[in-house]
Image (cartoon, rainbow, N blue to C red):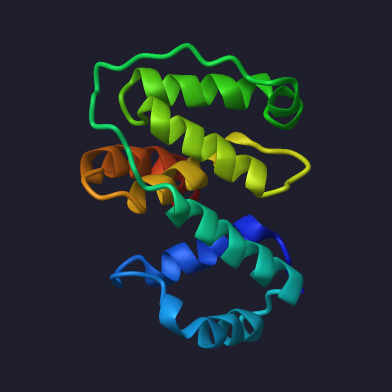
Amino acid sequence: MNDNVLDILIYLFENYLDSDAIPQANRDALREELEHAGFAESGISRALEWLEGLSADTTVVADAQMRSFRVFSGHEQVRLTADVRGYLLQLENIGILSPQQRELVVDRLLALNAEEVDIEQVKWVVLMVLFSQPGQELAYQRMEDLVFEGQSDALH
């Protein structure tokens, strides 16, 4: 059985992308579907908690001119490699993420409790954060291009 939280989140994201939202009203049915898909109970519980954390802070300041300097804590530096931190700052610099969204992404990456966070995981979490926030269609589309650009080569 698979208890990787990100695998469960990607499964949910891919299966519910076209619907309005993941069926929160019937969490038991969702849990049962995930178990039937082969995911472990411990991973399902953590994934559902992760989703709750994603929806807990959906306020994003629309001030695109706001700039901040981000200093990563020691704990964050241990969990997020220099490549990951640099990629997040790059996404902010090219306008895909706002400083507030970057903070939500960092929070959600740390909430994965993964031993190692790589760029592919960052891409998926950014995609999920952007998808969860209204008015982020252009940023979502740009990020979606980044997520899937390498995968199209593998299909040929």
